[in-house]
Length: 373
Image (tube, rainbow, N blue to C red; front, side, top):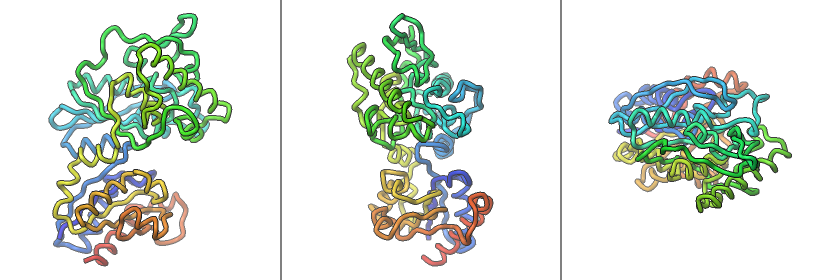
C-alpha cells in the first residue's frame, strides 16, 4: 500500500512541509506498514522556492534586499542540487505579507527587491531561473525589478523617475542598462492567472484593492500601466499588454516578459513537473492533498486542481484536507476529489485553529487512512 502526501501550505499556520509531515504522522499511526511518500507542493506564491529547492536536493541562500517600501529585509532563494537552476519567489522581497495593513499602498511600493534577488541568483552561476510571482504588494509593472537590474525610466524632461507605481504614468522613455544583466539566463515565470495588464480585468482593478489602492488610485495606476505598455511598444515594438498573465503580480508578468525575456507558464504544471510529481504518483493507491481553504478559487486553475487532474488521469483517488471547506458536492466533483474534509473538530477562533493545526491534520489523516484502507 502506497500513499502520496502532496499538500499545499495552510496559509498562516503550517508550511507545505509541515502539513506533509503531520499527514505522514497520522498515516503511519493508522497504517504502520504502508509506504508513505511526502511531496509538499506550492502554488507559485509563498513557499514555492523552498518547495522546489527541497525537491531538487538544493541549497537555500539568504541575502538582504529591499522590501516593497525600500527597507532592508532578509530574503531567501534556492539553488538546485546541480547548481543549474535558481528558484525565486517575489513574495520574499516584494510580498504583501511584508507590510502592515496601514502600509499597503501600491502607488508607493515596488519590486526593486525582486530584482536584487534576480541579481543574486544570476551571480551563483545558475543558467535557469524559475520565478514565482504570487502574493505581491506591488502594482509597478516590474519597473522596480528592472531598476535593480540597471534600467532607467525618464519623464518628459529627461529626469530619472523613482521606479514606483505612481510614476508609471510619467514615463516617457526607457533606458536599458549598458550591458545585459543576465546574459544567457533563461527565465520561467510560474503564473496561474490569465489577466491582461490593463483594463477592468487587468492587474490594477482586480488585485489593486487588496493591496490598499483607493478607487482614485485604481484609475491612475491602470492608466500608468497602459502608459508603460505604450512606451514599450513605441520604443521596442513589443506588445506586452495583451499577453495572458501579463497582469499577474501588479504587472510583474508583463515586466518579466519584457525586461527578462521570460516565458510565462501555468504555475501548476511548472511546479508539478519540477518536483517530479508524475514519478511519485506512479503506483500510489491514494493521494492526500490539501490547503488552508477549499473554495471556488480552488477550481480556477489552482494547485489542487492540477493534482487531481493528474491523479484522475492515472485512476488514483484523491482526498483533500483543509481548514475551511467552502465547496458543495457538485464543486467537489468538479475538483476531482473522492472526498474532502475540514480538519477542524470544534468551534474555535482562527488563533486557536492555528495553534492546533498540526494535531488536527494528524487526526484527520488518521481517520481518512482508516476509512479508505
